[in-house]
Amino acid sequence: MVSVKVLRGLELFQGLSDEQIKEIAALAKEEEFEEGAVIFQEDTEAENLYILEEGRVALRFRLIVRPLSKETTVDTVRRGEAFGWSALVKPHRLTASAICAERAKAVVIRGKELRELFEKNHHVGYIVMTNIAEIIATRLRDVRLQLIREMGQSILYGW
Image (cartoon, rainbow, N blue to C red; front, side):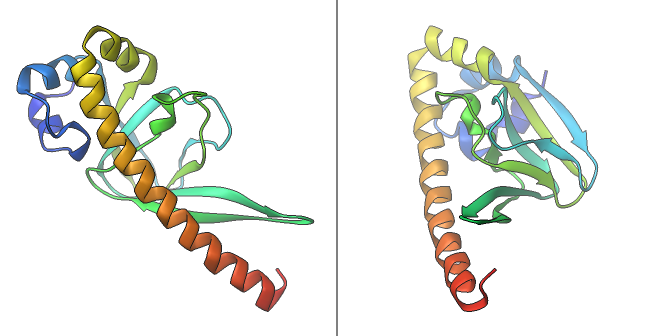
């Protein structure tokens, strides 16, 4: 179990009471990862939600422009930010890979257990999913900008 104090300050849980956060804390654990560790791979089943406590994690995906393919970093997760949100959203497939840019520590919550909590307490689910939607919207904007840059480079340099 992770302490309520650790979770209280995280953006993902803003708007929840200490009692509600306590329910989530009971589902959470902490894990540490070495630099270069692959936390998860793109297009695999999303099992866990992660919230970064320390370090940096690169989110990468394969950009395919036939006949070429290139892996690119589309975002870097920093302290307090969530990743692996696909564990909460159908079809529960990861949209990117997560690779530690440096040694990292994260809060890890099994998506299935968190979804079950949301079923029991719709208010908690609503608040967390609203916060997840903001994360997804921000990442989508960032990916669009990254794609524009990558496409421009591919035209210029013919990667």
